[in-house]
Amino acid sequence: MTSVTQPANLSSYGARAIVTSGVKLGVITALGVTVFALLSRTMAGTSETVVQSLLVLVGGVVFSFLPAIWMRPTDVDSIAWSALVGLLGALTFTVLDTAILRPLNMYHFTWDQIGGGSGFWYIPVWWMGSAVLAWLGSWLYAIMNRDGQVNLVSTIGQTLVMALVLFGILVMTGIGPFRTAIMALAFSLALVLHVPLAAALRRR
Image 1 (cartoon, one colour):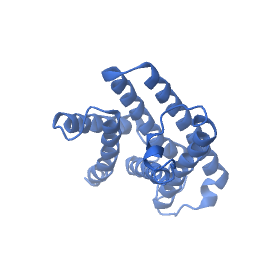
Image 2 (image 1 turned 180 degrees about the vertical axis):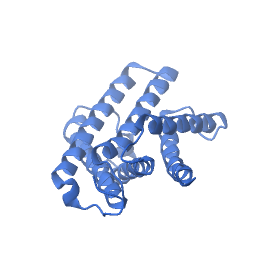
Image 3 (image 1 turned 90 degrees about the vertical axis):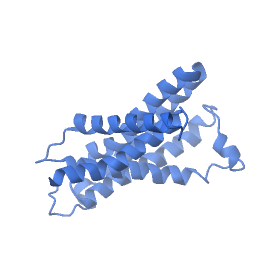
């Protein structure tokens, strides 16, 4: 493992390991999206929102923290490699989505219709968002690293609790409706807030 004082480089982690991790993340994402889509066909109303929101939370945890688990970041450079794993995961999912899920009409392509039949007005945003999630999760992993050990259960649990609290605030105040997309927003905001909070507590 690279020490904090020694910058990480590509050879430290291996290009093959980074690419392989990204591909695995993309495959896992495709499986999760497939489960999400199939459930949407058999459920409706509140139960659909609750179940799909839980899937979103699981997916958020996987995409945010799995790259960190694989890369074990300890400094700025290794956090960047973890973010690259997130980007490669999104790119892999895009290929699988285009080659398999879309031809099977797995779900409605509302965003494509908004874009005049093209998905490339929003897909790059998904790529960037995926890299940011992996970046934040890896940053948090590095902050919580104490003598080479990270209590992932506690770290992930704290993020999830913050996400649920934010979701409740957004819904009860009327800022956002009781929808799965709001849970995705709440998880992202929780991760954004958890990083500086963890850093501040670490300095105490």
